[in-house]
Length: 341
Image 1 (cartoon, helix red, strand yellow):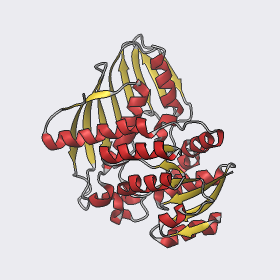
Image 2 (cartoon, one colour; image 1 turned 90 degrees about the vertical axis):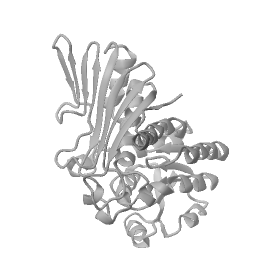
Image 3 (tube, rainbow, N blue to C red; image 1 turned 45 degrees about the vertical axis):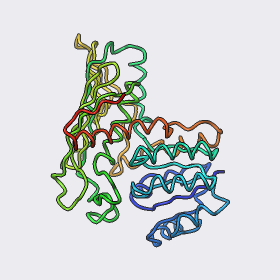
């Protein structure tokens, strides 16, 4: 059994980490920590274990094998590094870090610790995305020309435990808004699906929808890959209607639509007009019926530790996804296309 501590008992912990750990037979939920102690105590009432207000006291508990870091963005790196130094494996929420320097330090500390660090990028674990990568690797689509990948919803003000007062909207704690919440997911998944890197980034980023916020809520980015595939990445907290979490690949042999249809989240339309429709399970959401679907992140993390195997979504790899987002901000600030050498 793996003894787990959860640091941060806000929305993502309640919706994903804690219930999915609770359902995993290989896990003991041992400790919960939150600066609002009552939130940790609430979880102890349900799952047992011990409540902490100071995460360093939790890390000092020798019985804890691994932790989930589910705190505001600006604390991800600090707490992750402290946990690794304390001999704990770490599952860190995205974005992994908010600067290149701190991500580099996280990677170095992981190497020195002998522990494992995994970043919670669930979109790589969605079957539709995995099959899309397989199709591209097998050259079923032919030459890839362009893409559009988008993640938008009305924003965290409706589901965050603190509503409009949430850290999500405070620059000093979130550092970035929709781009850190949603954009980094799409940067990561398009890298994963295409299995290549992007060497040019242009970003157009605004705050138009959340007037009470000090972070971005809308972004459109233009990306160019090493093999000259071009496309757009959208991240938004202003999709005030149906959520969009789709990716569309335009290729020599046809068009591949991912998570663009509720009934068939995998649709390939060939240039001859033939249509392949599949439903491999789609993507989980944090509301409604989708709540019952596993994100696969917790089980994947636990299985890797249980088998003493390397975790997927490593810090070295995910750092490149965050760098796309950081370069988009740099582009927006300088009115220049950022070229990565």
